[in-house]
Length: 535
Image (tube, rainbow, N blue to C red; front, side, top):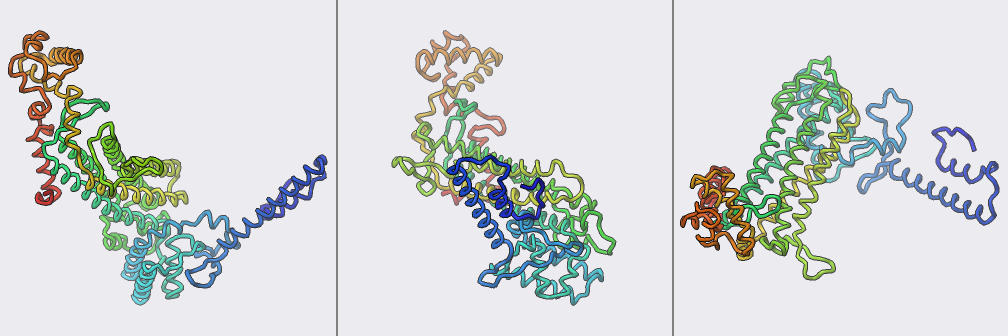
């Protein structure tokens, strides 16, 4: 067997050499050698089959219902004497996923062609041919009749090559003063901008659903938890509105991200700009950007806007995951506070009695994907020198996945929230446990002039006494209370019990009825909710 093998040597030839060149190998038993030879021959056949299949997939492009199209020269292929191998082409292509940018790519090309004509770099006739051709291509894509070719690598070259096939020479002028480096990042900024608008719509929808849910459960007190232990009584409305607040900050992060990414890279070209008299402000205005990016190297090389977008998505996903976790717990037999309808529940393939809140379990689970997408792009970007690097092709799939996932999470959470009820009877039975009114009793002692640390100790001894008697603070007689500390008076019974406890909260933003009513009114007004819709 040769020590060195040329890279072009087919895999099958190597396997054939391996099955025939055995002079330097001790002769094994006839049975073992025969078995080994059959195995190697089988490998050789399998390798040939794999190679044949790969050629079938990549050596031609087959349009729907059409004839095979032979591979064509690359638009960048002028200085090359050989075409890339099938393996390199399969590994390098991005059309399988970046075709999602077609609408933004066509929009950018329209603005660019219009600017080139305005600057005298192409004729108005060429501009009109380009614009008309792009319109036809867009309609063809949307009708599902466009042929996406892997040998054309990406969405930009697919559209440009199709335009060239359609209108000829004018299409070859479209890439004047433009690189795929600035083209792709322009597309991506436009796509992110559109995606943020869709996410903001779904966030507001979920906020509205949660506010309606709060309005339908006025006055319902539930246990509030810290460390997953009973803490203090809170109004369910207060708890639901806490998620509305978190979603509002999520929306704010997306809006901030949109404002920061809304600057135009088009015209930065590969990295250094161009010597042609283009008008970057014209294209920026046409595409709805705030302004062109000031530095052409920065324009093509950084994906901090993608990282910020993914970060905002990750934080929103964590908020949704926490809501999902709470509702999954509340739907369990151990809690029994929440009852999902059959329309948002699933069953078990083996246990007939099961009714599972699977949508919210998946919301909890899919948050991991969104966070993972952020980590992927963080690691992708961490070692890149200025300016553009092909690594950045890999920013799109995590971004697309993150947006698809967060949109699904928002949508299904809103759907779930519209199809649940709260078990008032079960919640009422659960309220006495845990001495939820203990902190309110401590506040009572503070109002009597007792230092808080002392009142904390006194109420702690009251709770210990209740535990020994298996009773609640409201069950203790005045004699029993004064035996613990003489500061207690008859008015103490206005501070014990969950209803009394909730009624005593008065600080801004607290769970007191008046405070929660103010919060609810704020959100009804801000979200434009009709109060009749909750009826």
